[in-house]
View (cartoon, one colour):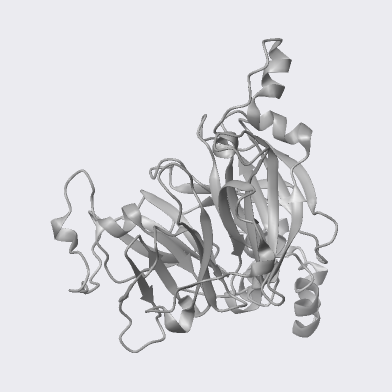
Length: 408
């Protein structure tokens, strides 16, 4: 058979570049464009290997958590730099179609997966609840770590389903994983010889609320309610990662005054660089128990100086959309009275200096706040439209640095 015109065509000019010059060109591509270029030719596929892509900056994304674990085998993520939504498929490498993302560290993503049909050979830890004791209403869960860009995953040692139902997962550098509940915490470090879960009792006055891992300070921070059944009173606690057993202590300064009294239902998030702690909540209009909120306030604690300052305040027009005033005005109906629950309808999530807000009254979009580099301008507020799928569910999520810098 005679050769076709395509077979006789000369190779593209880029194929004649020396390897060093080709690498120099491809290293200038954003990670997303480099991944798209891999299937173009054999030369690109061989050059754009996983070690090569690990040299490119990671892709900072907001990863949305699906309200249902059977979310179709994929997750949606928002790229704040390009202002676009991405779809991350998992079915090509993850044999478990029922999963829920819970945390990330670098390029590693952690998932609770339905382990009822798993063939994992992980050895159970006898000090933890056995998955064989779980009921059909709560099928056994396993914690998995994966890199969705590289298409690889690994199951961590087995945990009982109670940890999945009641635990908060935190992930840190070096593959460190923490699971916190009201009474105890579990830690896992793959570099340790035993590579098993270690149990640490919690000496806290109440269940830790919105715990975060401040990587720069090598410590865990959490809020605890030390008030009464009739009125909440929040206090900040911290624990060094090197002293998870018995290391919890309140973080207090006389100069802080009533900083924890002005916010309703506060929540912690990690600030930029791992050396700041953000506390977000509804700004009370007064100190009365049932006082409504006037807006959402973001306070920032500098861990170097241990001083609080106001990092941002949601603009009034944006906050009205979360209270239903914008919807009522558009429909020409009566304006709803301020709810005593205040900020309860606003869901807060994010990390590393980026905060997103979701609510039932702002369907299909999110409010976004981004901390400025110097921390002096009050940050940048904006709307994110076109949130894909999920019906009328309230969105939640966290920051994920997609890339090839770490593998399970």
